[in-house]
Amino acid sequence: MDFVALPPGSSLVRDEAKHRSWTVEVGPLSVGRTPVTRADYARGLGQPPPAVDGDLPQTDVSWNDAVAFCNRLSQLDGLSPCYAGPIERESAHVRCDFSADGYRLPTEAEWEYACRAGDVEPRYGPLDDIAWWRGNSDDRLHPVAQKAPNAWGLHDTIGNVWEWCWDVYDRDVYGWCRVFRGGGFVDKERGCRASCRRKSHPTFRIDDLGFRLVRRG
Image (cartoon, rainbow, N blue to C red; front, side, top):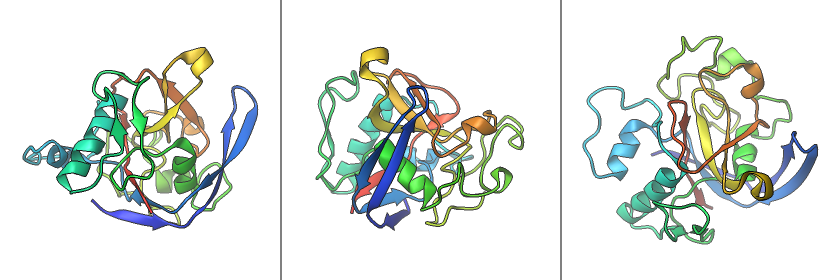
């Protein structure tokens, strides 16, 4: 899997529903150049790669599935797992060691920082050039890295599949629902923006929701 090292900086995260925003400092970070593919996922599970469509994003994966995969891949690659707790059953009691050198999900501040790549516009280029969305996807997934990357060389941060993040969306209102970002292949323009936030229960799975890996430093 190919990772891109990003410089430290800060990310302005907005909650449009509550009309609030906050700034988060983002340390040195390495981010997957693409979402996790079906071939990547099979390797992490110790399975043979799919005979076809291995370069499609891995979908139908819950937040719990994604966290468990991060730990399995970390162990496979001789790295320290980031997650502890009942990671394959629950969300509330999962803990993340951000100092570990293994793979993990990005925080939503890290995700938005990586997606924007220094750009302040809703998206880092014309939508048709950078993303698979309702207007051009023919209502189906597409192989990763077919659209133009952002300024840091990351593909598909917008469109094709939504991507799970570490964060709880709003604990007081929605319980342990987790954030996902980026828009998918069936979404309209409004859903395909760097600032768009959505959420679901950590056991939720659907065909336009995947994830991307990050590592410390």
